[in-house]
Image (cartoon, rainbow, N blue to C red):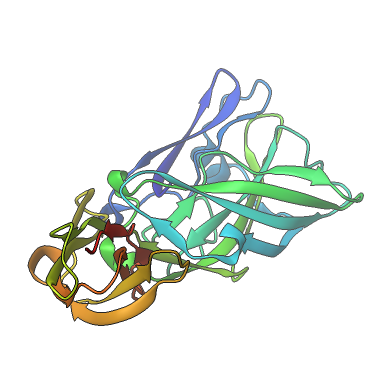
Length: 301
Protein backbone atom coordinates (compact mmCIF):
# COMPACT_ATOMS: atom_id res chain seq x y z
CA UNK A 1 0.00 0.00 0.00
CA UNK A 2 1.57 3.24 -1.14
CA UNK A 3 -0.08 6.15 0.57
CA UNK A 4 -0.57 9.72 1.43
CA UNK A 5 -1.88 9.70 4.99
CA UNK A 6 -3.91 11.98 7.21
CA UNK A 7 -4.68 11.55 10.88
CA UNK A 8 -7.81 12.32 12.89
CA UNK A 9 -9.16 11.67 16.38
CA UNK A 10 -12.50 9.87 16.17
CA UNK A 11 -14.64 9.11 19.25
CA UNK A 12 -11.64 9.32 21.56
CA UNK A 13 -9.54 6.96 19.46
CA UNK A 14 -6.49 7.79 17.43
CA UNK A 15 -7.37 6.91 13.84
CA UNK A 16 -4.76 6.62 11.13
CA UNK A 17 -6.43 6.95 7.74
CA UNK A 18 -4.84 6.81 4.34
CA UNK A 19 -5.69 6.95 0.68
CA UNK A 20 -3.70 5.75 -2.28
CA UNK A 21 -2.24 8.24 -4.73
CA UNK A 22 -0.03 7.94 -7.82
CA UNK A 23 3.71 7.96 -7.20
CA UNK A 24 4.31 11.34 -8.75
CA UNK A 25 1.68 12.94 -6.55
CA UNK A 26 2.45 11.29 -3.21
CA UNK A 27 2.82 13.82 -0.40
CA UNK A 28 1.76 14.45 3.20
CA UNK A 29 2.63 12.34 6.23
CA UNK A 30 4.25 8.94 5.90
CA UNK A 31 1.76 7.04 8.03
CA UNK A 32 0.50 3.55 7.13
CA UNK A 33 -3.21 2.77 7.27
CA UNK A 34 -3.02 0.54 10.33
CA UNK A 35 -6.56 1.23 11.53
CA UNK A 36 -7.17 2.60 15.02
CA UNK A 37 -4.92 2.95 18.03
CA UNK A 38 -7.12 2.92 21.13
CA UNK A 39 -6.18 6.03 23.08
CA UNK A 40 -8.78 6.82 25.72
CA UNK A 41 -10.84 10.00 25.70
CA UNK A 42 -8.43 12.43 24.08
CA UNK A 43 -9.81 14.51 21.22
CA UNK A 44 -6.71 16.05 19.67
CA UNK A 45 -5.71 15.48 16.07
CA UNK A 46 -2.54 13.44 15.65
CA UNK A 47 -0.62 15.87 13.48
CA UNK A 48 -1.70 19.07 15.23
CA UNK A 49 -1.03 17.71 18.69
CA UNK A 50 2.46 16.47 17.95
CA UNK A 51 3.54 19.69 16.30
CA UNK A 52 2.08 22.06 18.88
CA UNK A 53 2.11 20.20 22.19
CA UNK A 54 5.25 18.11 22.58
CA UNK A 55 8.22 16.63 20.80
CA UNK A 56 7.90 13.03 19.72
CA UNK A 57 10.45 10.71 21.29
CA UNK A 58 12.43 8.07 19.45
CA UNK A 59 11.14 4.73 20.68
CA UNK A 60 13.68 2.38 22.22
CA UNK A 61 13.01 -0.45 19.79
CA UNK A 62 14.96 -2.04 16.97
CA UNK A 63 14.26 -4.40 14.08
CA UNK A 64 16.55 -7.21 12.95
CA UNK A 65 16.62 -10.37 10.87
CA UNK A 66 14.04 -9.00 8.44
CA UNK A 67 13.21 -11.33 5.57
CA UNK A 68 10.92 -10.17 2.77
CA UNK A 69 9.08 -12.84 0.74
CA UNK A 70 11.42 -15.51 2.10
CA UNK A 71 14.26 -13.88 0.18
CA UNK A 72 12.62 -14.38 -3.22
CA UNK A 73 11.83 -11.71 -5.79
CA UNK A 74 8.43 -10.07 -5.40
CA UNK A 75 6.54 -10.64 -8.66
CA UNK A 76 3.63 -8.27 -9.18
CA UNK A 77 1.00 -8.53 -11.89
CA UNK A 78 -2.04 -6.28 -12.20
CA UNK A 79 -3.83 -7.36 -9.02
CA UNK A 80 -3.12 -6.98 -5.31
CA UNK A 81 -0.11 -8.86 -3.96
CA UNK A 82 0.46 -9.45 -0.23
CA UNK A 83 4.13 -9.99 0.54
CA UNK A 84 5.05 -11.92 3.73
CA UNK A 85 7.67 -10.40 6.02
CA UNK A 86 9.24 -11.82 9.18
CA UNK A 87 11.62 -10.18 11.64
CA UNK A 88 12.67 -9.84 15.28
CA UNK A 89 11.59 -6.83 17.34
CA UNK A 90 13.78 -5.86 20.30
CA UNK A 91 12.40 -3.31 22.77
CA UNK A 92 13.04 -1.68 26.12
CA UNK A 93 11.56 -3.48 29.12
CA UNK A 94 9.22 -0.56 29.73
CA UNK A 95 7.51 -0.81 26.34
CA UNK A 96 4.39 -2.97 26.27
CA UNK A 97 4.23 -4.25 22.72
CA UNK A 98 0.86 -5.90 23.42
CA UNK A 99 -0.78 -2.54 24.16
CA UNK A 100 -3.33 -1.22 21.66
CA UNK A 101 -1.39 2.05 21.79
CA UNK A 102 1.70 0.43 20.24
CA UNK A 103 1.93 -0.66 16.61
CA UNK A 104 4.78 -1.77 14.41
CA UNK A 105 5.32 -3.17 10.96
CA UNK A 106 7.63 -3.42 7.93
CA UNK A 107 7.73 -1.30 4.80
CA UNK A 108 9.65 -1.01 1.55
CA UNK A 109 11.19 2.26 0.44
CA UNK A 110 12.87 3.15 -2.81
CA UNK A 111 14.86 6.30 -2.08
CA UNK A 112 15.19 8.08 1.27
CA UNK A 113 14.23 6.56 4.62
CA UNK A 114 11.29 8.42 6.22
CA UNK A 115 12.17 10.00 9.56
CA UNK A 116 8.85 11.28 10.91
CA UNK A 117 5.11 10.86 10.48
CA UNK A 118 5.00 14.66 10.23
CA UNK A 119 7.34 15.08 7.28
CA UNK A 120 6.31 15.97 3.75
CA UNK A 121 6.42 12.63 2.02
CA UNK A 122 7.21 12.25 -1.65
CA UNK A 123 9.44 9.18 -1.99
CA UNK A 124 7.92 5.80 -2.94
CA UNK A 125 7.10 3.70 0.14
CA UNK A 126 5.00 0.53 0.49
CA UNK A 127 3.29 -0.50 3.75
CA UNK A 128 0.91 -3.26 4.78
CA UNK A 129 -2.79 -2.76 5.38
CA UNK A 130 -2.39 -4.06 8.93
CA UNK A 131 0.36 -3.84 11.57
CA UNK A 132 2.50 -6.83 12.42
CA UNK A 133 1.51 -9.56 14.84
CA UNK A 134 4.26 -10.33 17.33
CA UNK A 135 4.86 -13.14 19.80
CA UNK A 136 7.18 -12.54 22.74
CA UNK A 137 10.28 -14.74 22.83
CA UNK A 138 11.74 -13.05 25.93
CA UNK A 139 11.02 -10.03 28.13
CA UNK A 140 12.48 -7.70 25.51
CA UNK A 141 12.28 -9.55 22.18
CA UNK A 142 9.48 -10.75 19.94
CA UNK A 143 9.12 -12.70 16.73
CA UNK A 144 6.95 -10.76 14.29
CA UNK A 145 5.23 -11.42 11.00
CA UNK A 146 3.35 -9.09 8.69
CA UNK A 147 2.27 -8.47 5.12
CA UNK A 148 3.19 -5.63 2.79
CA UNK A 149 0.23 -5.07 0.46
CA UNK A 150 0.84 -3.85 -3.08
CA UNK A 151 -1.97 -2.68 -5.37
CA UNK A 152 -0.56 -1.73 -8.78
CA UNK A 153 -4.03 -0.84 -10.04
CA UNK A 154 -4.30 1.93 -7.44
CA UNK A 155 -1.06 3.63 -8.35
CA UNK A 156 1.22 1.82 -5.90
CA UNK A 157 3.87 1.21 -8.57
CA UNK A 158 5.29 2.77 -11.70
CA UNK A 159 6.80 0.53 -14.36
CA UNK A 160 10.17 2.19 -13.75
CA UNK A 161 10.05 0.98 -10.14
CA UNK A 162 10.67 -2.66 -11.08
CA UNK A 163 14.00 -2.52 -9.27
CA UNK A 164 15.49 -3.45 -5.91
CA UNK A 165 13.80 -1.76 -2.92
CA UNK A 166 15.10 -1.42 0.64
CA UNK A 167 13.31 -2.85 3.67
CA UNK A 168 12.56 -0.89 6.83
CA UNK A 169 10.61 -1.09 10.07
CA UNK A 170 8.29 1.42 11.77
CA UNK A 171 7.03 1.50 15.36
CA UNK A 172 4.61 4.11 16.74
CA UNK A 173 3.11 4.70 20.18
CA UNK A 174 0.41 7.01 21.56
CA UNK A 175 -0.52 8.17 25.06
CA UNK A 176 -3.91 7.93 26.80
CA UNK A 177 -4.96 11.26 25.27
CA UNK A 178 -4.56 10.04 21.74
CA UNK A 179 -1.33 11.92 21.04
CA UNK A 180 1.69 10.44 19.34
CA UNK A 181 4.44 10.07 21.94
CA UNK A 182 7.02 7.98 20.15
CA UNK A 183 8.08 6.63 16.79
CA UNK A 184 11.01 4.73 15.33
CA UNK A 185 11.95 4.46 11.68
CA UNK A 186 14.74 2.00 10.90
CA UNK A 187 16.09 1.34 7.44
CA UNK A 188 18.60 -0.85 5.61
CA UNK A 189 17.09 -4.03 7.05
CA UNK A 190 17.32 -5.91 3.79
CA UNK A 191 16.23 -5.67 0.18
CA UNK A 192 13.47 -6.92 -2.08
CA UNK A 193 13.58 -7.09 -5.86
CA UNK A 194 10.25 -6.10 -7.41
CA UNK A 195 9.55 -7.56 -10.85
CA UNK A 196 6.74 -7.29 -13.37
CA UNK A 197 4.82 -10.54 -13.91
CA UNK A 198 5.14 -12.08 -17.38
CA UNK A 199 2.94 -14.51 -19.31
CA UNK A 200 3.45 -16.88 -22.23
CA UNK A 201 -0.01 -17.54 -23.62
CA UNK A 202 -1.64 -19.40 -26.47
CA UNK A 203 1.20 -21.86 -27.12
CA UNK A 204 0.28 -23.98 -30.13
CA UNK A 205 2.19 -26.49 -32.23
CA UNK A 206 0.51 -27.32 -35.55
CA UNK A 207 -0.58 -28.99 -37.70
CA UNK A 208 -1.36 -32.20 -35.91
CA UNK A 209 -1.20 -34.97 -36.44
CA UNK A 210 1.83 -34.37 -38.63
CA UNK A 211 4.02 -36.69 -40.66
CA UNK A 212 7.61 -37.20 -39.57
CA UNK A 213 9.94 -34.79 -41.34
CA UNK A 214 7.22 -32.28 -42.12
CA UNK A 215 7.28 -28.68 -40.85
CA UNK A 216 5.70 -27.77 -37.54
CA UNK A 217 4.86 -24.16 -36.68
CA UNK A 218 4.98 -23.22 -33.00
CA UNK A 219 3.38 -19.97 -31.84
CA UNK A 220 2.77 -18.11 -28.60
CA UNK A 221 2.76 -14.58 -27.16
CA UNK A 222 4.95 -12.97 -24.50
CA UNK A 223 3.30 -10.27 -22.40
CA UNK A 224 4.09 -8.56 -19.10
CA UNK A 225 2.18 -6.51 -16.56
CA UNK A 226 1.95 -2.78 -17.13
CA UNK A 227 1.57 -1.43 -13.59
CA UNK A 228 0.43 1.96 -14.81
CA UNK A 229 -2.37 0.80 -17.13
CA UNK A 230 -3.38 -2.21 -15.04
CA UNK A 231 -3.20 -4.46 -18.12
CA UNK A 232 -0.80 -6.89 -19.79
CA UNK A 233 1.02 -5.68 -22.89
CA UNK A 234 3.17 -7.39 -25.51
CA UNK A 235 6.88 -7.61 -24.70
CA UNK A 236 8.81 -7.41 -27.96
CA UNK A 237 12.49 -7.85 -28.77
CA UNK A 238 13.11 -10.46 -26.07
CA UNK A 239 15.07 -13.71 -26.40
CA UNK A 240 12.82 -16.72 -25.84
CA UNK A 241 13.81 -20.38 -26.04
CA UNK A 242 11.80 -23.08 -27.76
CA UNK A 243 12.10 -26.40 -25.93
CA UNK A 244 10.96 -29.95 -26.71
CA UNK A 245 10.19 -32.89 -24.42
CA UNK A 246 10.00 -36.26 -26.15
CA UNK A 247 7.09 -38.51 -25.20
CA UNK A 248 8.06 -40.85 -22.37
CA UNK A 249 10.73 -38.52 -20.97
CA UNK A 250 10.56 -35.86 -18.26
CA UNK A 251 13.12 -33.30 -19.39
CA UNK A 252 12.68 -30.44 -21.85
CA UNK A 253 15.66 -29.76 -24.13
CA UNK A 254 16.50 -26.53 -25.92
CA UNK A 255 15.71 -26.46 -29.64
CA UNK A 256 16.40 -22.86 -30.63
CA UNK A 257 16.23 -19.26 -29.43
CA UNK A 258 14.09 -16.65 -31.15
CA UNK A 259 13.15 -13.01 -30.53
CA UNK A 260 9.63 -11.91 -29.66
CA UNK A 261 8.15 -9.77 -32.39
CA UNK A 262 5.56 -7.03 -32.54
CA UNK A 263 3.20 -7.12 -29.54
CA UNK A 264 5.26 -9.98 -28.11
CA UNK A 265 4.36 -12.47 -30.87
CA UNK A 266 6.40 -15.68 -31.05
CA UNK A 267 6.51 -17.82 -34.18
CA UNK A 268 9.02 -20.37 -35.42
CA UNK A 269 9.21 -23.63 -37.38
CA UNK A 270 10.85 -27.01 -36.76
CA UNK A 271 10.84 -30.41 -38.45
CA UNK A 272 8.62 -33.08 -36.89
CA UNK A 273 10.76 -35.86 -35.45
CA UNK A 274 8.83 -37.61 -32.66
CA UNK A 275 5.77 -37.40 -30.45
CA UNK A 276 6.25 -34.87 -27.69
CA UNK A 277 5.55 -31.41 -26.30
CA UNK A 278 6.86 -28.02 -27.35
CA UNK A 279 7.00 -24.99 -25.10
CA UNK A 280 8.57 -21.53 -24.92
CA UNK A 281 10.69 -20.36 -21.98
CA UNK A 282 11.52 -16.75 -21.12
CA UNK A 283 14.49 -16.31 -18.76
CA UNK A 284 13.35 -12.90 -17.56
CA UNK A 285 15.16 -9.59 -17.21
CA UNK A 286 16.18 -7.48 -14.23
CA UNK A 287 12.70 -5.96 -14.02
CA UNK A 288 10.56 -8.76 -15.47
CA UNK A 289 10.09 -12.22 -13.96
CA UNK A 290 10.92 -15.43 -15.86
CA UNK A 291 8.11 -17.60 -17.17
CA UNK A 292 7.62 -21.03 -18.74
CA UNK A 293 4.71 -21.84 -21.02
CA UNK A 294 2.58 -24.94 -20.68
CA UNK A 295 3.73 -27.49 -23.23
CA UNK A 296 1.62 -28.33 -26.30
CA UNK A 297 1.72 -32.00 -27.34
CA UNK A 298 2.01 -32.93 -30.98
CA UNK A 299 1.35 -36.34 -32.52
CA UNK A 300 3.87 -37.35 -35.18
CA UNK A 301 2.82 -40.12 -37.58
